[in-house]
Amino acid sequence: MTKPVIAIVGRPNVGKSTIFNRIVGERVSIVEDIPGVTRDRIYSSADWLTHEFNIIDTGGIEIGDEPFLEQIRAQAEIAIQEADVIIFMTNGREGVTLADEQVAKILYKTKKPVVLAVNKIDNPDMREMIYDFYSLGFGEPFPISGSHGLGLGDLLDECAKHFPKEDEEQYSEDTIKFSLIGRPNVGKSSLVNAFLGQDRVIVSDIAGTTRDAIDTPYSYDGQEYVIIDTAGMRKRGKVYESTEKYSVLRAMRAIERSDVVLVVLNADEGIQEQDKKIAGYAHEAGKAIVIVVNKWDAVEKDDKTMNLFTQQIREHFLYLHYAPIIFVSAKTKQRVHQILSLVQRVSENHSMRIQSSILNEVIEDAIARNPAPTDKGRRLRIYYTTQVAIKPPTFVTFVNDPELMHFSYERFLENRIRETFDFEGTPIRMIARARD
Ligand code: GDP
Ligand code: GDP
Image (cartoon, rainbow, N blue to C red):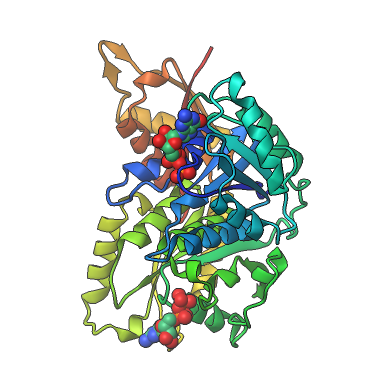
């Protein structure tokens, strides 16, 4: 299921990021703990009552030295492109400004639902300030206060009314959905063309943003695949499409819809910050991952080069220890045909289920070799482990006190599970839960 997306737009200083943070709450992202990966606070999952959605703060996407108007225009266009519902945010204390009208003008072009929010209405006496905003032409303005957290419930209720009906998954259960993620020019489109055997990806800049237009179905060796968001690989046209924040956002959206993510690196340029950010997100999202080092033809090498490169990748992507690495060339097609079988293999691992009886034998054996730790005189007791989910494989261990389950012991158990079963290419989630 694809979650609906809300985007917040509006001129600077109306309170977009304040509201974004309120809605997102204190979600700690493990990506933030990965050294070298900076916080990316413009896109996050969130929930309200029974609704789960993703939210974008378009105000966080700054476009080089473009003039002010160009910036907000681009941000509004991104909202139109990416969102199911748009929150148009204004500042009640300042009334309707020229810049608000400029934003409104761009939003008139979209058929997507726009919910008008008037922020900084910090107390009920100020409510009459919202009437002015009817003139923007988006119907009833919703008074909110980011600093006091007021009115957010009504605002989100209104947004939720416009969420698309749960769309049926359009691909069959057996279809493997994957995406190629990486900085511009690492060779993503060339690789896709190399699988497909023809120049099918770089089509003209089709307007339309329907999912069908951006996904490329493909069948190989009796297996159905869908390459997600091949449109994201098109040559950049609009001014915002070349900004890093936007391409990261685009990548995050593609990752979310994928089972398997191919993190494409350029052998010629080594590993860069943006590579880590995107790979970190794929890991956090629990996707199966293959690291593809492209342009291998362009590297001068001897018999040690591949090992050296592997070592570097392992050092930079410590948390991706489970991801297989493949060295390819889209240009000469060296090993390109192996990519899809690797995708298939890690996808199987990603949805593998382990019988509880076998799993518990492995865990008991692990405990026998390396007894559970004690903390302040109390010993961790492990009663039972069971796999509760696939994609990614998720294991719940029932214990006497989850506080006693240290990260390092959890890692030890994970490693024992990995040594016994083939979970290559997939993250594993371990959860300790108290048994009543
Ligand atoms: P953005 O540029 O639209 O993302 O705006 P920010 O979220 O950075 O907020 C701009 C300023 O407005 C900050 O100083 C906030 O503390 C302040 N602000 C945000 N929401 C409210 C609110 O509801 N009431 C008041 N009085 N100030 C607010
Ligand atoms: P994308 O932006 O990641 O989709 O990258 P492209 O597929 O557009 O490739 C960017 C440039 O790298 C183009 O000039 C390609 O011809 C070149 N390129 C792609 N793959 C290879 C490769 O395996 N070897 C070499 N030498 N060049 C490549």
